[in-house]
Length: 307
Image (cartoon, rainbow, N blue to C red; front, side, top):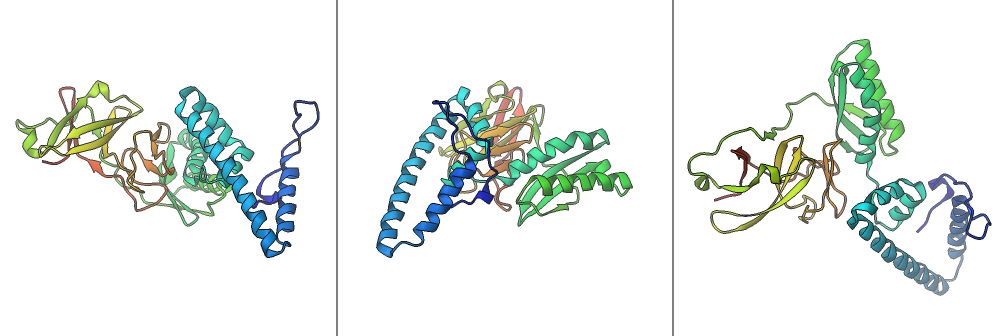
């Protein structure tokens, strides 16, 4: 559990229940650094015992923290408090040291872009994050940001400066050429033929059962009798269906978190983040959720899951 003072900015001393001041984070970090330095000087046998004691204590702490985090995530009222706590630098570092949360540069980058987006939009432009890879943030610029005038250069520089300064793991920004947006299926789209079963279509749900801004799990059965679990994302009344499997380890996405402002879906197991409307993985480029064909007919959602 090694850390140095440089890993974390010092915080102000906090009063304890008995009126005395609690040690600052800098004080605690220094104690850890001193203990680790002393540990290195021990004889091998003594060091082995000390390492085992340290590992055992850390295991107890991690087990307790996992229970706390899990219970807070399951409680709708406590979930917002948990997210606020994770934003606290000390809490974030503690959870990161125990492997409970992983640094997510994509989420941080999207927050940074949210802050600069109003300024871009005031000039008729916009920006979207495509992925972060090897320290480079790949973005697409729209409108006034995508031209060659001096104002567009200024807006591009604004995006690059914000990402490099606001995301520690980002050292550079590359602007990708614009491409057609992913095909989305609106509620008013294509009708079903007279014999949908022959084409592998299954009536999945009524449109009002697929709540806007949420992820809905559906248990479907193919024409051959195979059970298939599907999740449907509804963002601004545009629907996208996926197999209920994360591209990382195939774990279910039932409890995935939807960020409506950024249009992302985050797996609850290991934090893999996806574009909610295309299934592209933003955490690990190249990974992809398996998207399923979908249609809407007379208020009914149909999904093609095989024959």
